[in-house]
Length: 523
Image 1: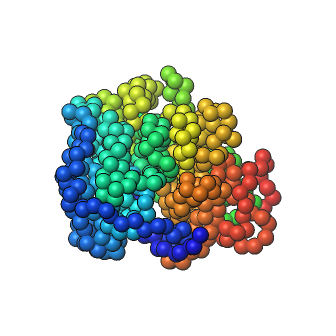
Image 2: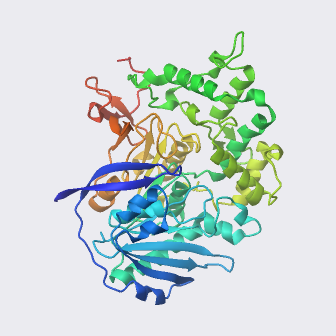
Image 3: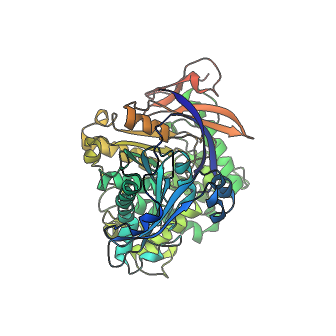
């Protein structure tokens, strides 16, 4: 097949940072719109109403966005912009948009995800998908704003946020696409990270026929567990300032962790390849005399141990994972990231206790995490390990997670993968349809000290459309606009292993292998 180089721009992560890629992509058949964009305004949708059907000229959407997004929008080719309001329940008010190329459609559909409790249309991610020739859609999940107050006294809106909005958007999008092009999409994909990764897993678990391929990045699949973990750490730190770590101490701690565990993979590169092999105990940093930023007090040592540690739901005996060694640079004075803490507070304040005045100091992990899971009842959590219906119908799932993520525990991803393997009869039952890629030194969705720039979509397309499973994903790190390291991301539990010669900053000198039982000799 003839190949062509295309520039893909605007891969948005929840922090609003954009990564730029050159991606080799198979040339696709260009399909043209068969119908009128304006005519879609009269299209009948079950439980939905088209509120806008408007052609957008080349670069014409730039006036609708601000900041960095304007540059990306200015490069867009003409498309049909459709806005829809969906009301699957009497209390639903789900907004969605679908953008369809006026020409050069690749014949495929891509839905994109959200972040945290955010109720907004993800225009940045839609622009990225549209630029690649996709018909693209996004939903506000049934509310506006960034908190969970929408759910107070509105259980149907919580269901919309949890899973229904994405499904209803997908059904409506496919019907609109079929009307506009007189042909439905040949392949349908989901692409999301963080809350968008949670949405991805929810789609695979609840609606196995919605998507042919799914990308689930850093998924917040243990939504209630992450909320409880963030508050479990924040509560004592709010009350005891002396137990908090300063930024200088977090940097000192991180340097000590990396120094202790960097060479476990045989390569000194400032990154811990597999944090599960790192047993660093912060007790070695406890102050022996004068207390300053070069050491930790006893209370601070216990704070660090608590952040690393897993906790257990005493009712279900389910382990709720902590953060990994190597994530310290992303911690805050109150432990987990501010986003994790505020999302957790909103979860308990509005959705668990229905009390806007509830505070972190009222939190009791032993009882409240039990209540949170019971109240959620599989509405937002995406912990169901039964992916058999999705996999049986040929669906492909790529999940990825940065090992240094300070916002959503990366161990929740490896834990879930193991649970799916157990439910389906072993990891060998998954490898042909579901692969997890753990990214060493990478933070939440992107960034960090490791190679945090990668593009999962071409690999998923190859897998779904051509049967070529991803044995590795190329990742890179850049500094000052220049790529200074490339490295393969490997299907879990494999790790990138140095071949023994050549630059350790070049991916070609690594291969994906099963982790050794003992640390290899340093090179």
